[in-house]
Amino acid sequence: MTVNIKQTLHILIAAALLVLGSSCSKTPIPPDPEIGAKNLSVELDKSYLGSGLVDSAIAVWDINGQQKRVALSNHNDTLSADINQFEAGSGTLTIQVFSKLKFGNSSLSQWLFTQQVAITQKTGLKIAGPKNFSDLHWKPRVELKDGIGNFAVVALRPDDPYFFVKNLSANLKSIVVARDYWKTGGGVFRVGGGEWKCNTNCTNSNGDVENSQFFSFLPAQIGTASWNHIEITILYIMDQWGGGPALMITHTL
Image (cartoon, rainbow, N blue to C red; front, side):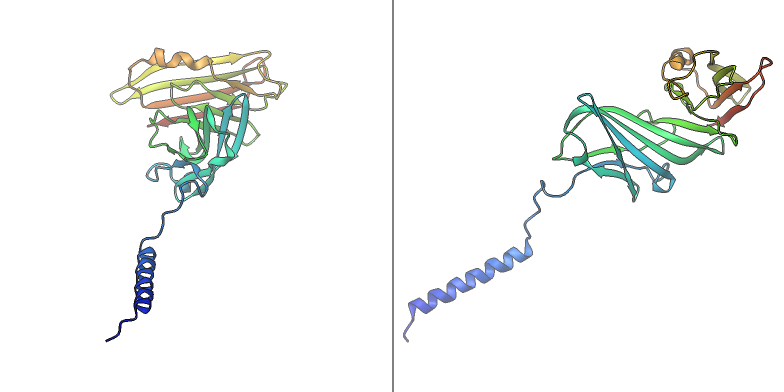
């Protein structure tokens, strides 16, 4: 029998290529991790504050004296934005979630996350969303409003001193913001609180009041005492007898 060496080599090479091709088809090459958008994402806890309870959310990135605001998309219990929208480096990341979760039965809430972080476009950044009222990574705040246009945002927990009262009337005699914390059950005990009051020169250039300092005394005042009831009151005093509208909320945990 005559063997054609050249023909045999062609057959062997063809068989080798066939095997190689079959192997490649079964083991695809993984994608380059540098390819594709990486995200800044907030992984929501659907048992507490999932996608259905989020109205909108924004991320604010402060770095090198510049500020970037980005709206976050809301899908499948994740809030996200392309990480490439944020300048790389170390800075302060603030995430504000406007929520349909209510306190006091009718008042909508906002949730604030602020932290020093490092951002790189090569990897995403994942943050856990609020897990409950006491989640120290997030600050719950409540929106107060009435039918005549008065609007305010006030922090709920003692560790957050913030309050904001929008667009005060020029006819206002004074404005009062009061926060009180109580322990109920087996009696009613006031654990701590206080009130901020202003008569003149109360507003900023927009006619608003925004304060992140006054109620800073609350954590030291309350200490380790337990509490489960919150009362917040904003008084708009319009006359010499103390009359005027009020915004109020009471909430028991």
